[in-house]
Image 1 (tube, rainbow, N blue to C red):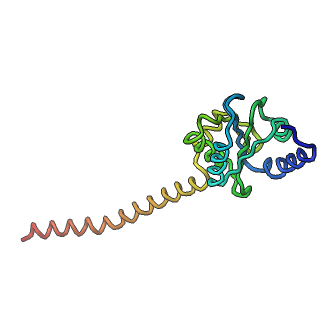
Image 2: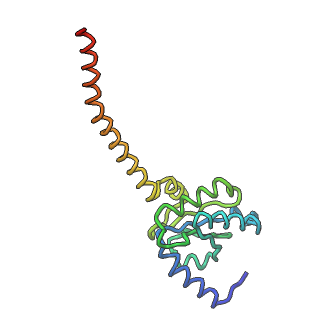
Image 3: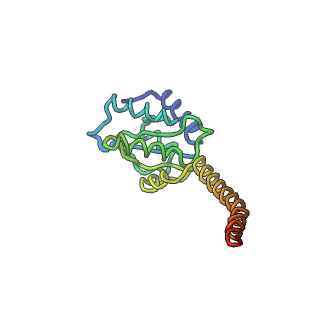
Length: 177
């Protein structure tokens, strides 16, 4: 469906100022021109993505190529996924959210083209690997857990020294009687 020049200018403005400035943007496509996504599936997919804080938009391939020249040749319906809140955008969250969503519920409808992370294009395989990387929050939680475990072991070790001395004294006192 053709869109007017003014609408294209508006879309390009949004893509350039809001989307291209994010740290990570993911690109999806339908599996083939015959296998388009029906309205019901499209609505379910977008709703599930919104619940994860992601925005999904279908954009004309020619407009995407203007904003993201590093993309390979595009054909068919192309969907764009990015974070609603650009300040929360990081290198991993978009890939993690979309890969999880597609692999669980929409595998037959969508396939990954790749992603643009901090201006560099990652192909499908690299994007899937990126999705397996822990997010910033998950990394912080893992570090905090490791530190907490070390502190707990130190506390147990400190407590064990007097306890073992007490056990030794108790055993020695049994032998004296």
